[in-house]
Image (tube, rainbow, N blue to C red; front, top):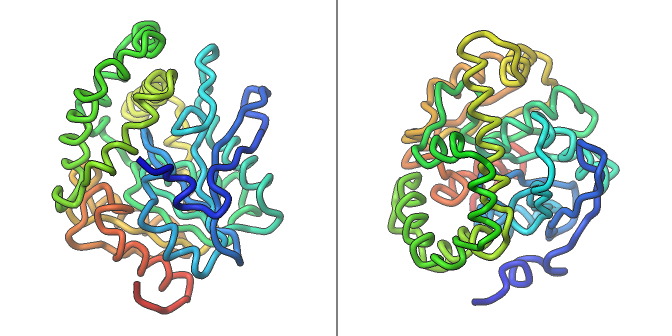
Length: 311
């Protein structure tokens, strides 16, 4: 199988060292393509830069596109010896942006990455020129998938043992088969998912010990956030919700009409709370919009950014 990073980016996979939210140095994997205004792509939970595979080339014709794997995901470092603080991705994403550009950037973010982007727009407004968020779990009622719920309740010691013993590598065919079934479930047209897609989607889980542990840890944080949100205990989600009106960046909200994880009404509610915003509902689109409806997503982004061409 060809190296995706080398095939996608002129310089292949690059590495950046930042200080994480706990003050430790951590290595972040990223790739960039194109020139012009910086445009960062944020992935969702359990994903990595590969999820934006259909957007990098079209957007890089107009912008300096930068894809990075958040700490604990994809090809970035996975510090399993210490536990994460809630909100660490906000701080770390800001430091990645600051390290790679000295001008306000365009942020295009999907799913959990979009929640992080909304928080960034509130806490670090100087870093963001324009914002595009896709299928944002900003008003969640529960974790949307049984696998997420399972990992959110599993003792991290057990998950880490599975990682350490490399059981996902040992049972790689089974892992890929399960992931194939699950990924097809978030696509409007499941037939578009190829074996190469499955290979790269599952690659970090199979090849990099610590990936499963860090994803489980993030899911446990998310589950606790949702629990606290429902009983009105202090939580980060409610803080982000409360401060949506403070976002000054021009914002585009994209939502899959058939998103079974987070309904379109959440997008409608979100659009009413952010002052300078547009909402575009994408037909024939489920939760995985960046891949499953990539042509519509790319066209909507370019139109919003006033490029004004079709993909």
